[in-house]
Image 1 (cartoon, rainbow, N blue to C red):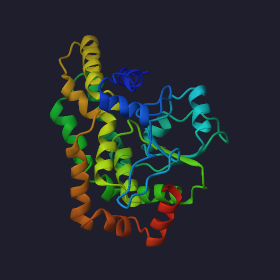
Image 2: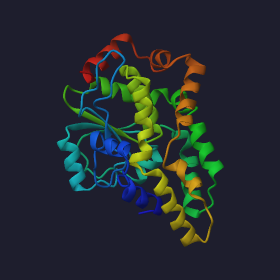
Image 3: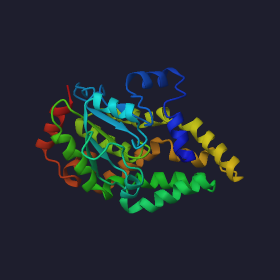
Amino acid sequence: MTIVRAAIVALALCGLGDAEQTQASEDRAIPIEGVANTRDLGGLQTKDGRSIRTGQLIRSGEIDRMGADGMALVEDLGVTSIVDLRTTLESTADPVLWPDGQGPERYNFPVMEQEAQMIEDMRASIKSGTATETQTDTLFFEAFGYIATDYTKEFRALFDVLIEQPEGEAVLYHCSGGKDRTGVATALVLSALGVTQEDIEADFMMSNVLKDARNASVKIADQVNAERGTSMTPEAVWPSLGVRMEYLNNFYSSVNETYSSVDNYLHEGLGLTDQDLEKLRNRYLN
């Protein structure tokens, strides 16, 4: 296991100290061994007073390190569909461990496929201790400016799975860290369901808590520097583990620039009809 991945797994659900963190952990986090940043979207409120059903929409980081107990838990949670938003390179290098023909139905809709090598280069720079804060922060900030507009086909495919998911059966969707591609996907899904902006933003920022981004960044930088003799700062690592509201705002800016609103993006960019959205809301809202 790589230094970065080992630290993420070990620290993903630790360090939940203050009241906000405790509430985040107790109320919505799902501790699955070997899987980081997992939570149920159930309970988030919509603008018209409804709420998302619990146990139906689950977001997480990559699941390839999930053991037998974790796989059993996912099935016990009623997950029958898993959507992988990682690139082909990522999903091929680290496949899920269910044998073919077993476990939930699995889909791969690779978001940032064209940037796959850029992602690997960024990870390599962290592992070598050569990453800088400016490089990693810029990479993630800029990615939020094109993920939604460049990968409409992949996000539409995710919505198709959600819309057609049988009643009462849960969907789990994930990328690698469960914070960027999954974060954009979640912002789109929650917007389509009519969730309040406050809840969308709070859920997005919860990744910092569940991944213990601050402490994990320090640990990774210290480990790499000790092994490589480098002087990489925790701030250079942090963007690979955490999120900033500026990232989400850049996502909104890009969507608004091209489509004028998220609602128009859902209709024009993804081709969702009013009937599609109504079906989605009836399926996942109380």
